[in-house]
Length: 310
Image (tube, rainbow, N blue to C red; front, side, top):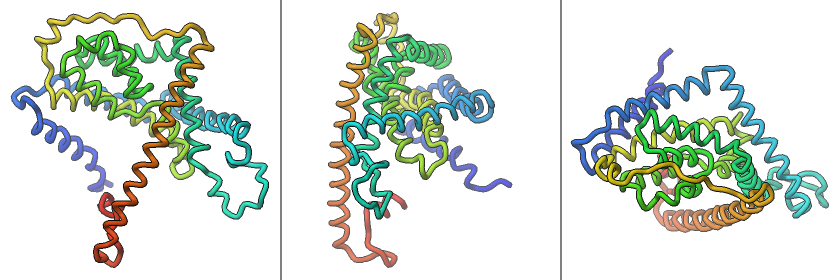
């Protein structure tokens, strides 16, 4: 039976596109062909990832792989931090097993392992082939030039920093619209390291959380391209004046070099995430403290969580 909630996604689609058009730098130029292509890609991805049993099995296997990766990471964490990492072997009676889940020991270390594996898979050519395949799809269906298409494909798996780094030699020659597009896609997708962190946190409350996050990140890339092109329309003259060809890929000296540099990159990401969480949670607590000075509303204190929930 049809429910009004079923139209929520469709309504959101129309409202967001209309809002971006209202804020566009040139409302007379709307990328109709790009909009059709982006929506078609999203539709095919959703139907394929959720409707085709082989692809659905692949996504489910990826979800199981994420859980196995998190479990393997805990082995390394337990070796370094001992009982502080949680799990078995606690030197005292545990009254609240849930308290053993410490974000710094259970989530942030996974980022290190994922970054190391991503660098290794890139060096072996596996991730490179997948990224190029996605880049080719975006190039052919959405009219992107080669390097930006490659960066968009890399952003899906590597995140908003690593994606543009793959084409750093071309960044100075990209048009303003293309640079804005890369930033938008970077903010719309979920980096592989953060993806695994989310899945680790949500696995006990959301079945197959990793599969949902992977699917959301993949289908968000064409959406980011479309909304960026609406806000800052494509400058065809600027792109024709700066021809681009795909250049050399990011390279590592060896497998050990890939793992080492991946760990180094992951450490920076993990530290940034941990520090950002500390600051933003503290800021939220400050806001809640100030809101607590106001009278109760609907029988309960006013909080930032209630405001954002509404």
